[in-house]
Length: 105
Image 1: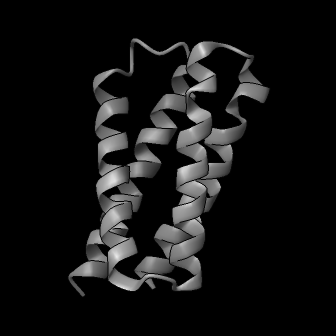
Image 2 (image 1 turned 90 degrees about the vertical axis):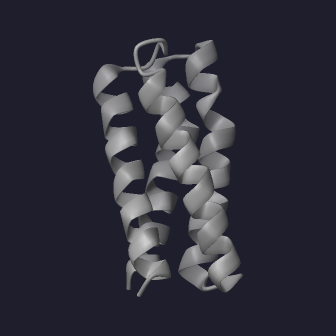
Image 3 (image 1 turned 135 degrees about the vertical axis):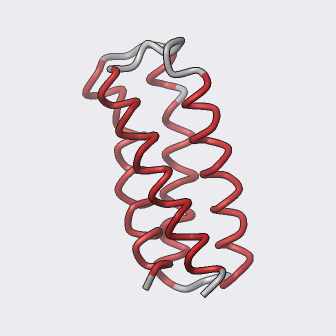
């Protein structure tokens, strides 16, 4: 159950990361979100489809935790709407919690 929640959130936030440049304008910082979004989308699809099992969960956990940490430490340096940045960080925290719950269940 927790893996599905994490996978669904990864798909959602992956699409949002990849399309943020359309909604907020074409700037360097919004373009840098595109590869992050594509990686999140791929990991989310793998988790939802159950491909890769625990390896994909661990990889997703490490990458999302690293992304959330980087976003939090540099949150005032990016030219991205503040509410979007805060939402990305909060969704990443929920994904990390869901993956930890899935791994230790």
